[in-house]
Image (cartoon, rainbow, N blue to C red; front, side, top):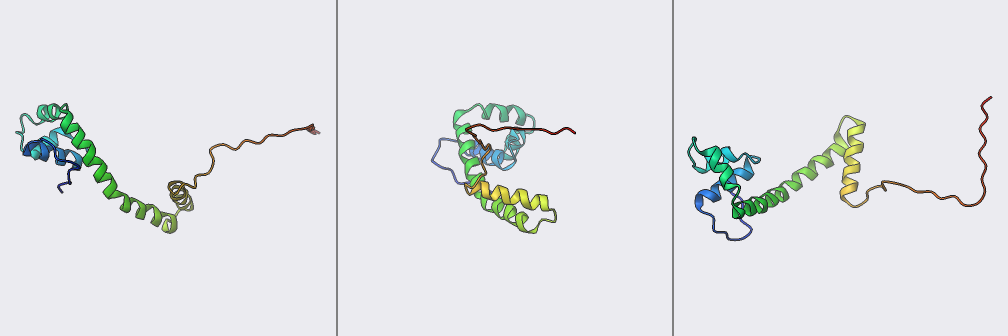
Length: 126
């Protein structure tokens, strides 16, 4: 799957294919180099060399953001489904909390209570 570039770059067609493969295969430079047409023998070295090129790194970042954005609807569907259909009550609860957190309804991490005035505590150990 070829991802749309955010802006026009000066990458060669082979470098462009490397970036697509690198993003698609989860960040394996040698595998991406082989898929882009670099030789089996030099794939590991070429992958490493390509990832030191600032234009390639920038393009990898931009295409990764696009790929992540494209996967968000499926992730939301999965968490929504878990919140209503999971067999485990714990999984349903955690999925519901995740949905609420993402909607900006996160519970406070810490609650602080202040008391003023005199108070007395007695403990009966008998």
